[in-house]
Image 1 (cartoon, rainbow, N blue to C red):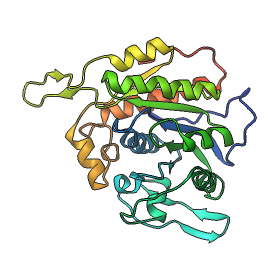
Image 2: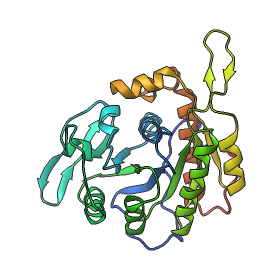
Image 3: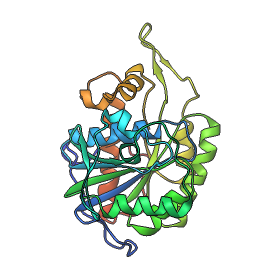
Image 4: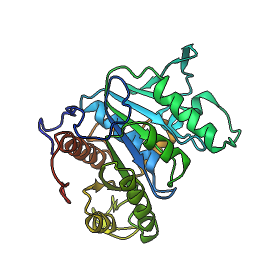
Length: 287
């Protein structure tokens, strides 16, 4: 657990990183990624952002999933960002988190058919034109997989570290390998693996039910020599929170489903402090 026991103290930008451009005022740029869809990556990104804000940090959330921008629904807003001029966009704020998403710029159900260069350009707009101000953490919800958007982001800005989201199933974990290898190839630090939809606490017998298997995320993290950031349980309130625009983390740490989210948030803070202090090889287990 990071110093301060519960406060998301920002870490200073790390020395010795590749000389890629940084975003002015942003201390830590954190990519939230997954090797495949359907693992709840956006749910994790949204709740992580709100948990970090609740723990006392200044937080931004950039929805880089331009094909399926679900962040606005989960954050409960359809407010449009304000363009001051061609090069200045004021982000929307929800739950104290500054936010930008294609879902706010292109509201409605019309699907986007975009090519690589267009994706590159919108990511650059989000990074460079949005007035993020002073942030301790800017979380970027990447689309699933290892394609154009991910590489465009990683190649054009200094990413402090990546959080890789998976579920306990072996099928999902096979794709984690691809995500970890992608970040390693471009020298982005892996902050760790989060196992989402990890287990279910039965309300009737107080027993833990491992719906999709048990411990696979932890094994995968160990095999790759990266930290395991924690397990987020399956709780109806997490799903309901996302569907209704009232994320579980926004109800506080003791709300149903929120405790495991806040535990992951504290571990992310601890890992960022470790990375930014230039500490050696990551600890495989920091729980």
